[in-house]
Each structure stands twice: as C-alpha cells, then as structure tokens.
Length: 119
Ligand SMILES: [Zn+2]
Image (cartoon, rainbow, N blue to C red; front, side, top):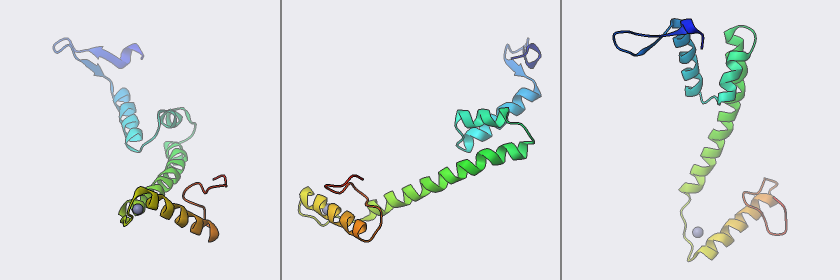
C-alpha cells in the first residue's frame, strides 16, 4: 500500500483510507457479493479496457455457472420431494437402479452408475 493511501487519525488512532482505496474495496465487496472467486476479482482489477467490459467478461462466465448450479439445485429439490414408499432400503436402492436403467433406455443420462457400465 502506498504511503499516501493510509494514515492514522491522531485523535482516534483508527486507520483512515483515502477515497481510491475505499472505492477499490467497494468493487471488491461487490465482486464478492456476485460470487466471484478471488481469481475472478483479481481479473477484474488486472484486465485491460473499460470497466464495463471487465465486468462483462467475468459476469458472463459467472452467470453460466449460476445457471448450471440452479439446474443442479432444481434436480436436488425434485429428488427431495419424492416420497419413499419402500419397505426397506434395499427396495429403495432397487427402485433407484430401475429408474436409472429406465432413463438410460430412454436415451437420457443415467442419474446413478448402472451396474456393469461406467457412468
Ligand atoms: Zn424408497
């Protein structure tokens, strides 16, 4: 940190930062609130070009990640909403395998590894 960026307030002893540091911290906070990793936030600061372009580059990638995550969450919610009517866990497992084999037969990606096949 450059010397002029920070000084101690004699009366309170607290650190005071100048406006440019506060602005950078606000950008960093926003990046964090957007779910950016530290590397992505760093990219924001290190990239060339206008801020709009810098945000866009990282945001496009992050939004695709969030879409994928939302699909995963929706899938998890679907599974959690299923009601079990099995007599025991073995029946549960058998039903899960049957459902997965059915998905595979229908040409969809199986939800669980199917015996004798690699997932
Ligand atoms: Zn069950």
